[in-house]
Length: 297
Image 1: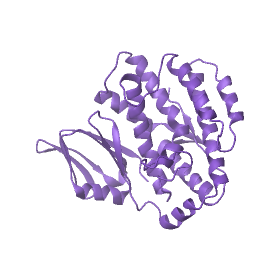
Image 2: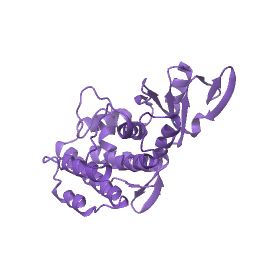
Image 3: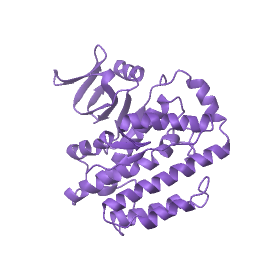
Image 4: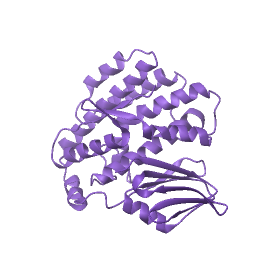
């Protein structure tokens, strides 16, 4: 898979030509990118026109297409159904995954998330030890909801005691929402590429959510977004609405790195290995391996 992310804001006409994404404005071509070089296409603006031919070409090439709503927050992802040669067989195995294996996978996921949150606290100058200690209390399936306990402590220490995590708001939360949505699209792309169905989560179970497994798998990587948002907030403390420059900086989460078995990998190759490990954990009973985010300077 290729790893380039292209973001287009309107007004523009976006089409396919010879397996290239071609962007035109006022009748003039302003950009052209080979589909084979791309991982995702981010579309933002009510005055964008996109051809069906381009959407089909993106699906064939394994390029995730992300759309945005009137608040400029990502609200949809188009994913390829051709990501894995044994998609149907893997889907059946995923459906038949034993409950103990699912619970073990969630236990590993929660522990990895707390460890990543502790990395952010350490970079913020806070003591990460109390948060790290919570990992020892995470049992199979996390029946005690240690994840929520850790999250409450983490956000208070990282973002301040008055911070309230909300999905429908501005400022800090708006930046978090945008960054998480971008990360979610990349995780969903890797999951589909591994042959897994993104709607069958290991913890998230909302029947109206088509990306439950992506929401599960991205949990240990969310702190990478948190760190970028904290740095942006320090530079723009009075920011309320997302501006194009801020959104471009939030998309930089897709250019971060992860640690995987002692290796430092860029995000997309790391997600591919992560998704493959998740497939083996759910379909073959192996232990789940989770990458650790590398926080940028």
